[in-house]
Image 1 (cartoon, rainbow, N blue to C red):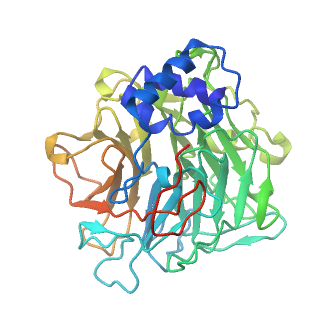
Image 2: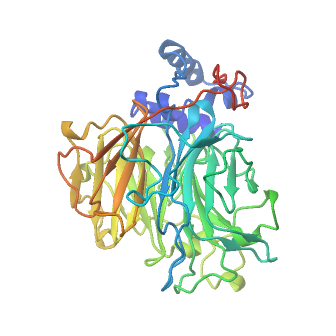
Length: 456
């Protein structure tokens, strides 16, 4: 019932947002549950009146996840960070059960995964093997090594499956491979309930690289309204890994539909995305259900608070930790914060209902009800349900530092150059309409040229 609780915690705030973002797997999960409340019946009637999400081959079908990497991305801090050899981008098309891959082989003028010389793009290939509801995405240009010596080569593509309740990991992913390879590693855990955003922590609380060099994977788990962390050093090899969380944060709400009631100090209510600063050892959470962004210091210890203290060196093993500070209140303009990323000391937040990108520079010292340093909003932006956000930090691509947004209301992508200075009612640099290839008939299949998968 955790997924149902999460659904209702959102629909009263933003019915449209709830329909597009949280009803997607509700029916599957709820149909096998004992529903004793009036709210499920009302919600089902609401769904019926709106119709099923469309399967449109000319647009992205609910792009809840987005990741772009052409230089360094999500790597361990070092003097010589690894660079990616094949720049690529990945976008989820939730309604057609795919991760779409964009790759520009041999491009010298444009290192991005997207061919930004065009406004309408078709993906190079797509991944659909074993995926039910691909959700959040992450690309890392750094591989990792587990405690028993298993090596996951770079680049690494991480995908959260919001219906299958698993994390798929492609090691040494080659974006030019059109054969639809299955995940190298699949993390299964009974704790995963509609997982979405992900972030990597490569250092301990003193800033020392983890040894062996494998990150803590933080996962926003909105279906259970909590945050999970997995120490990837636990993975024993390729295939399915049934590993338990190494840490995380408890749900901040419990009971009561559609309104969650305060339960724990974490203040979490339907968190959708996470970001992590390795330099500041800080975890950022888009706490969507409470219209705020939570900021938790000593992030590494949150990632291992279910592990023995003697092993981690952390003083506390509590999962019931209040935020160190947070962004909340009318001055913040936060309404339904979803995608977020921490980049060069600034926090970028995509807010679905506000139709804005809100940016706090020097956010670590920021507290509570403060106005964003910069705000990108207004009719010139053409925003229509901004959701996921990703920043490409390639300095060799003038002007570089481009951030990309997915839009779930119309199924397209936007890009802005000069991420570190962009502000105001400004038009996007890039407006990318993605041609989404169709799938064969039948749920979970793919690769055909006609028909669409069944949504339910």
